[in-house]
Length: 316
Image (tube, rainbow, N blue to C red; front, side):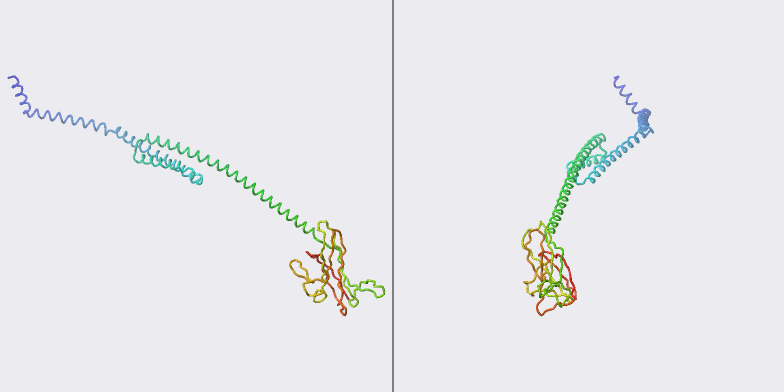
């Protein structure tokens, strides 16, 4: 019986319009207070400042990380360019640096865990320092090797220069010896002579109509460097006017070679040279029924290897 009364009272309250308004008002009050608290917290100036500060810190962190990574790569690339040939020896370490840099850049772009990025960047910096240390070691080794190569090159150059100098000195000495080891002549004298009919005494003459012989004398100098043996001495006499050389004949039997040229001779003498001075006489007999002509006669004296000297005489 009492239960029924209670239920009836409860039913009456629900059906009462005032009761419904009280409930609705209570719900609206709760919603209003919740909204007020929400906007008071999340849209207050201090909250906005906190949000802005967090955003700014992230942007600054991202910029700093990008700058550190960019600076590291710039320094690394500059070192590679500066030491191109040596950098080729560190390709494995270079690949590790570039791979880590690429991974870090991706994490920065995806706004990943900045603490993790900082750790990876620090690790990359250590790897880059190892690369620098290895490069410095290679540079020092290359410097030492270059220095040794330079010293070796200079030594070789000096040795070659010394060898060339010694060769030149040897050649010059040989040339001097060869030059010194040749016959030399002095007191070269040429004139015309005839013999007196009474006592056959030889008389020097300057008159063309009396000349019977052209006689040339000289002295071979003493020279211990010359190999003793038989040496040929040649005399060439050129007549006045056309310069024709007096010769016993036109065949090769009356020629000799001097400096690659074949020359005719007027008279020839074979000398047994024994390193001492030697008097030499060369004679041209003027043929019978032939007369010497007036003018100046040029006379040249040769050995087998060179011109020994020249002289001349004049007939009137």
